[in-house]
Amino acid sequence: MLAALRPVDVFAAGCILWELFSATQVWMDLGSRFDVVRAVCSGDRPDVLQAVIVGRDGVGDAHATRSLQALINSCWAQDAKKRPRARQIFSVMQQLVTPKVLSLIHISEPTRPRLIS
Image (cartoon, rainbow, N blue to C red; front, side):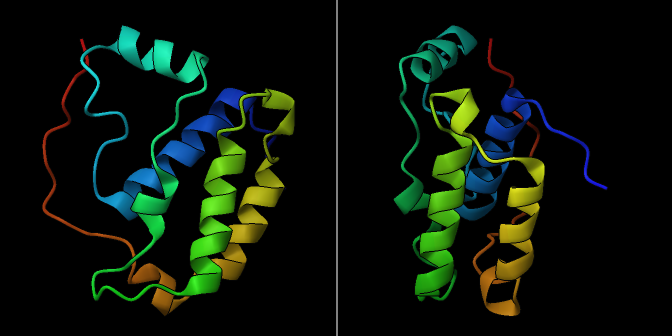
């Protein structure tokens, strides 16, 4: 049984998915955690299309791309009541996790996380 996720956890799940497929830290171009909070509260979101559109070989799966974009965008809905439930996230990911989609995830050497001050 999947535990219920709080809306903030669902938002974070969208961030994790974005980071997996973009191979960059979400909002890393913002200067401070206050800038991140300001951006999130004002409805700004990173470019999902840029994060998910192509894999390492430059060829993405069109259906998976659209589904992942929709999932990430739904996790980032400004109205927390419109964000998906854990079961919905799990269901979408279960359908999409194929070798082709896994090839879209950029795996690199681990780096030390940059703290936002």
